[in-house]
Amino acid sequence: MSFDSPVTDHAASDDCGVAILGAEENKFWHDHKGAKVNAIRTRKGIEDADIVVVRFGEKYKQWNAAFDAGYAAALGKSIIVLSQPEHQHALKEVHAAALAVAEEPRQVVEILRYALTGVLPG
Image 1: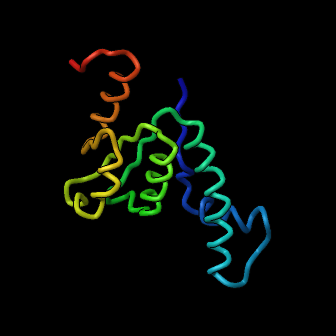
Image 2: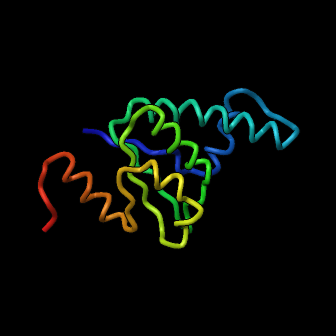
């Protein structure tokens, strides 16, 4: 069993494209390179995954994660969404693609434990 995650160093994520492929004067192309290089990593991770956890919240407002959830769904991956009730409307399509929608990280851990062992919490 192994776990993987997106790059959580925001500066590294933003600058990966120009750090690898060369500088850009225009911020649009700077961001474009980074988005494309990050997409290579993200898509590879989703393709290799058995279960995909997509997290949204105050600190995690990368709505491109909605695209990642859609990509995972198109590949037939099991999806668990972790989001707050106040995002219910904005994420209704993402929630519809998920097999489970959790509001707390503990719930995600319990779903994964159950999926791997068949043991209920407590």
